[in-house]
Image (cartoon, rainbow over the protein chains, first blue to last red):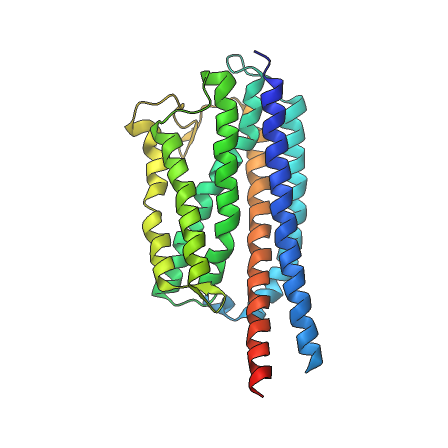
Length: 43
Length: 238
């Protein structure tokens, strides 16, 4: 049995999912911090 | 620890730390993954499927480490009423669930060419599946009972009680007959050849640093959202 399709599938799934979690966490943080900053400037 | 109960003091540390954890984690995880995929030797018995273990082991390590973090934060919330402990526990839950799912998926993909089956209902695999369901239940409970960005006492108690599954996962390959191999890395040493061990350790370190960066980013997001909510309430009352 050729193992490479299994190996490549595992790497693609893990690396894409990790990038997605990092990107989502970063986007949520940035959005919330920008909103908080805008509100504090308004006062 | 209580020195960082003040969000302002915590954020002064978290902002630079997030960047360093992210950069160091990405560098180590990319190096470890590329080396594991292209340059590490194939195993005599497992062949090239051994390369899957360079990413499978870090994901399962983070699945267990994540829940251990939730349990510690929950104890700090209940016993010492640390204001950031509940925020930390909530921030760990989603990445913990994602890495548990990745551990199950990569384990299943590794099992097909190695064991000849995608899935077995043995102690190790089943207890990690239970951990995944615990994460989902924790996330649902935390979302249903969010308190000032953190989680309710009931959710915290669930986080502590759920930790009983962690030693079960760890000892499952000793307590029950299993297709899963026994622990290769213990406190007394490792049975893995150094040619396989060091890239694995690089990836474990890299993914752990990335997990730390993810948790800090999510904590910062929760704290900022809480601040926005409080300010909007104050503005509405004025």
